[in-house]
Length: 215
Length: 215
Image (cartoon, rainbow over all chains, first blue to last red):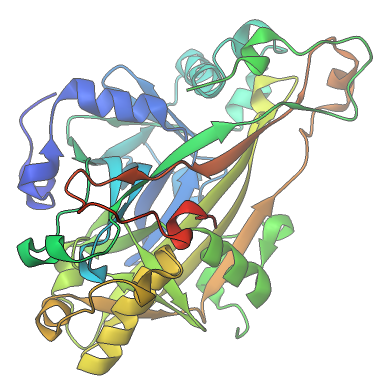
């Protein structure tokens, strides 16, 4: 991870910011939906989509996301990619000091479409394998036509930063004397028991990578 | 909800789009983190922040989000506000048809800071009460200084649309014969047992609106 650029540093609350690659990678690897911001005709557009980290870059599945990403040319598209994991609701003694515990990553940069067929195949496979580890071993392999019709963009993590808030509420000193409960309500993302496709052929049991799914 | 504008309709997959106010309101009311996109010096910026629906508009807590939102003048700031609820990982027989079940709302528009003191007080109170229903009855009331130092923006839902995907995988016709498990892994957001603030005064029990928290 290179030194933070001006636009990366300008946006952060210094005390919660981190440019540590390990922190950034861990947040990106736990999340599975990002919000990608682009500028279309001067206006902001924010779209949720799947992604996968590939070393020091992020791969974005551009096809379902937006026409601008889908039709990106070789010069790329300026994006801001944000991943947010909420860990808790912070309950304070005053309304003003209510907050959230969270871990977020913001990446600024130019997202470039992957034109090389083999590289795009590998990128699409990595997005599937990142979303559902172990899946790639069992699925029907991607065809070249499927890959051809799909836009995948690569975004460097050179301009990435993380923000993390943890712990309890920070109240005004005099408010600690008030008889008001305060603390944190933990927030987690849970993965439930798999629901089988009603069109499934008989005698196919749930594979371990599905029944043991976790992030 | 007025008729969809050109930029609202242009971005949607027609079969999954909805402009129904009930659908849009329900998604906004279940979520509690939005991703706000703005344009800063020509570049997109996407920031997660708290929000609350207030009838046919959304209130955004601008202060922690970004300098641009915090310093918004009376002419307002063009934003795209997106709320995404993930309901499931859709596991298909091919990698290509893996997907997610989700409900999302995208709102385009001009977010205007609330300058009137009393209206801003009410807006901040509503953001707290929306995040934690019942909380407003028990907290130390907001002071005028707290409210004065806070930017709250109002964004109309006139240009809002929802997208919803539900159900199992849609595979290629010939792939249904393959001996590959397919289905959906449900995804939910869970709220755990409250963690008490270590600085809490003795003999304050957990109130019902905290122990019974749900959305």
